[in-house]
Amino acid sequence: MRVPLSGTVPLRRPTAGRTLLEANLSARLGMPAGTMVDAAADPAALQERPMTDHASGNATDPDTRGRARALYDALRTHEPIEPLTTGAPDFSLEQAYEVQRRLVEMLLADGDQIVGYKLGLTSRPMQELLGVDTPDFSAVVDSQQLPDGAVVALDRFISPMIEAEFVFHLASPLQGPGVTIDEVVNATESISAGLEIVDSRIRDWAIRLPDTVADLASCGAVVVSARREPLPVGGARLLGMALSRNGELVDTGCGAATLGDPAAAVAWLANTLGSRGVRLEPGQLILTGALHKAVPLARGDHFVAEFDRIGSVDVHVE
Image (cartoon, rainbow, N blue to C red; front, side, top):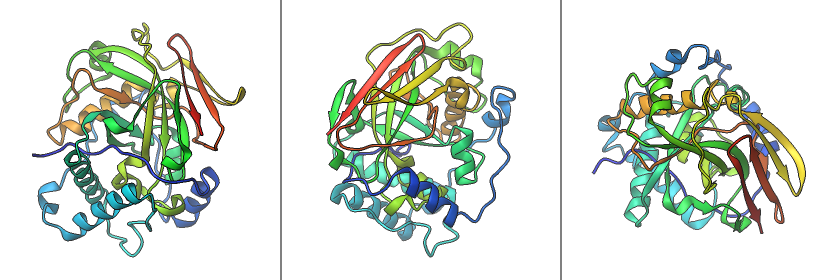
């Protein structure tokens, strides 16, 4: 069975979070920042750039299998691994997605199931940090889901950080190529408030783009509000969000931070998956990407993300 790519489960305790991420990226990245695209101004610029799936060419590649196994073992043992790109300068984005697909197959073989997808690198600051001009994605699996208001153990992760995101819920399927923002709006049943706990199985967040792609787009867990609201007339691009930690405001954002419009992120995902023969299905959740820079977690933290018109979502860390 061909599986459409990955999601994730947890790991151990944090090492350093945001400071390490930014320091390591600035030290390791040899690629210049790409030209950023405003999807709200020109949706087709992103929607017509599907990823290439070279799975058939990598199907028997022992390096692919070995990398997927190393990440799987890191998930299960809670021990980070060295960057996959270390000593492998030719490790490509296409190969990274094949590693991710194989890792998801391993999780599904353990009894997990895909419940949706997450996008990453949909904001300009994160794209600039990684020196790229395109998002990435991963499947979300059932074991990653936490209920709104959940208490989660810090030891479940290695180097966790948190991001507030819009979550789209579809009423009808979407399959690229050629999916537009208008088609996303028409296919959307509702939206809700969400939090993603990002985590890296790569030691100290010392990542390049293929590292995070292979590592389930650095997904650790997701928290989705049970409250759902219709997508407002005009969409979600101007809806605001305030993130607080222990009652103190730590960051704000709005829908336009994600490719200019969260619906543009969903369209990009539908078109990218469509190039791989996969479609977005009704009932699946779609996390459209961070509205702000990721915030490190610590034991005792209580994070609340309050969204304009659609309510709030929260999580406790112990």
